[in-house]
Length: 297
View 1 (cartoon, rainbow, N blue to C red):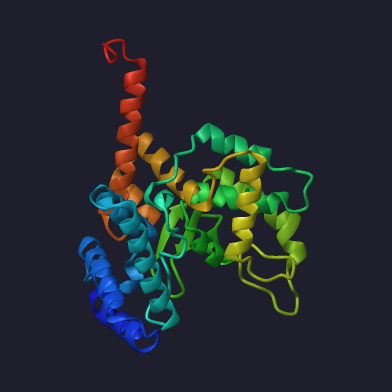
View 2: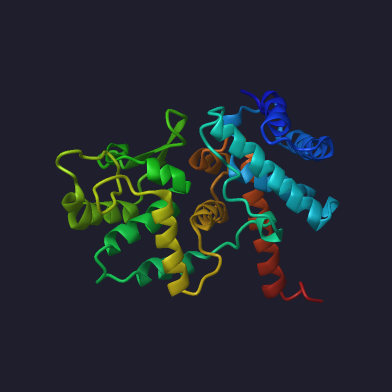
């Protein structure tokens, strides 16, 4: 179903199920029509990505008051939540948007040196150290969304061909990402030190990463791991999404073609990927202004 086809269903839901006033519904309608106009209303509900919404919000931020932006974000979140609850969409790309100005900015790009230091900082004496390292290596080494890591099965790892199959949602599109050396070592260490002992012999799980009961690790558990490491390293900008953001930015800074990065990220449109090129251009300007002898004259 397309977004423009889903909008009338949501507005009807607000009127009949939530019994909202005509004025309130009209406000929702204006916000969401504005959203659909900026995000391409003919797009399938399952092809909208968090980055697309973020890009839309960044583009209109200068035109709206902060209060209007907050209301718009609330409207977008409510719309996508409804689509999932009614089984119209399999994924909720607006789930982690927060009402407030922080939601309108891309996460600060963590340098490769910082990320390497973070991974090296994980306590090796911990029982789950190999699991925790794998979570970071996977998110940064593949650019995967947190939901994609949760959905990854052991069979999705091809050790012979050195590739990883990344699946976006149940039964949805998939992409192939190279299996880097560090990630490969992290997976092998996890299989040897943790996973094999966690497998439930009566009901074995296909998941790559398991919890203590031998079931698939949840996205909440992954968030908790990343948050703990962020707190340990006093990094407010460290999150699962910031690792995906760093993956894309570092590739582009290293000279990768934007369309290659688009494929690796699983973006439907190169326009979504373009936002990362803006970040690298800003970084180039910053380096230039700080280092070129004529830049400050």
